[in-house]
Image (cartoon, rainbow, N blue to C red; front, side):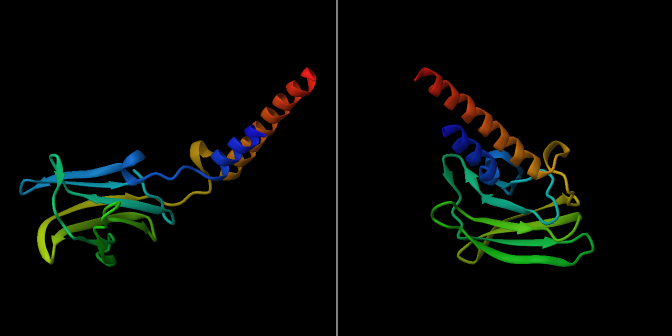
Length: 166
């Protein structure tokens, strides 16, 4: 029974991680302030959520800032998103965004403290088209079926050994 539970947990409920855990980051230093913006996908895909973490680490302590202003511009110059992200006491400033189409986007991020601009950075991010195949070219349901099969075989083997001992 434990094998089925483990298979279901790892197949049906994929691990959720912050942007810095497995993603990439845009790091730069502007006016002596180190900027570290992590995002969850090295190659963001159209229609999939990308999580952004906005940090200003300075040695042992973080730079004091109250909010972050984020602007996403498409490659045609149109503004796709312009928003403020509050620097929460727990978890810091974090946002998710779903890119509407493939192309090169310019992300502009400005850190502020009580309305006073501290530092700004800008970089380009390439978004790739969505495909119907998942990791290694297999569709998502192939992983679901493989997980259920492995869990079922594991359960059968464990229960079969228990029955043979009694």
